[in-house]
Image 1 (spheres, rainbow, N blue to C red):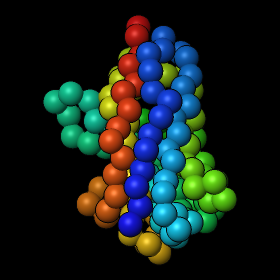
Image 2 (image 1 turned 180 degrees about the horizontal axis):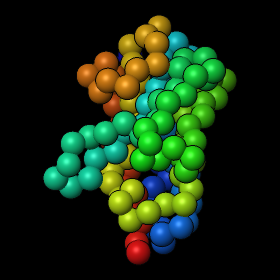
Image 3 (image 1 turned 60 degrees about the horizontal axis):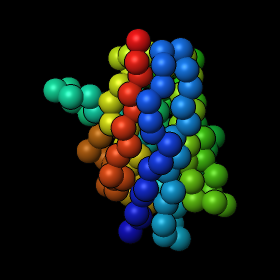
Length: 125
């Protein structure tokens, strides 16, 4: 069982940066692939970054590639999302998520078994 708590959301102007953090409880954090998702009002939840359990592999959709960076620290049980060059269309609730243990990095939402409560990111124009 993994419990996830996000922090770091807020209001930022377009072109600015934010860093989201996700703190995980449990002894198995290092065995879980992790992802950051977002959901804007009226839209489906979408993946914005994923990282393998070791941290050696990452994935970004084209919409955020080159602007967002996911990283993890297995010693501290944390995963972070550095967001640069933010755009108004990045406005959403951002969620941290974990797969079941020992799953490979995945882009499929239903393969993430554990979710945080979300943190709001608002980018003003």
